[in-house]
Length: 149
Image 1 (cartoon, rainbow, N blue to C red):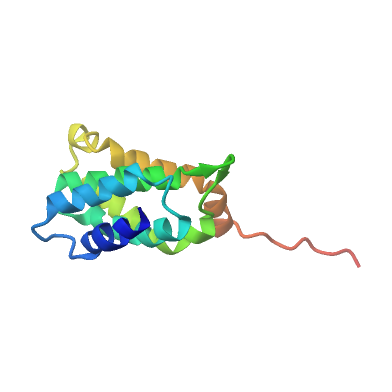
Image 2 (cartoon, rainbow, N blue to C red):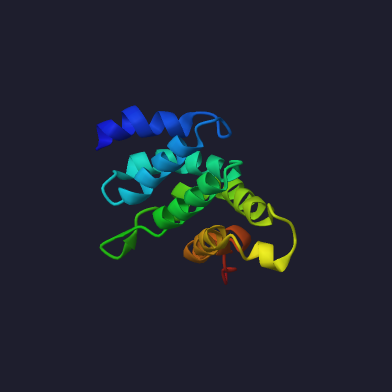
């Protein structure tokens, strides 16, 4: 499976986001989604920024599959523990949130249109919810208590 990923899936995901291979990209993203539990952590971590890039795809299917797959990767657990720590996902934080907001707002400000991209909203909220301790540490760093001398 890893060999197939390296030879077939990774090149498709690594190519330009908006080329004429939307069906191939959607199938490659679907492969990652389907086999996320069998793919090793380093491969999933390497795939994460590629999926974030595909949130900006012109193809709605590619962008939506990327949002769904990112949400499922973020939600991965082994023995009740998150597979990815907040520190491992931190480098993608800004780009991920900007891309998800852009995907949600792609169709305009009409509330009915905003509600149409449920997978992007779920991905964003899961990321924010799962990583709330990380966000808390970003905005409220631990402070030293004054010592009594």
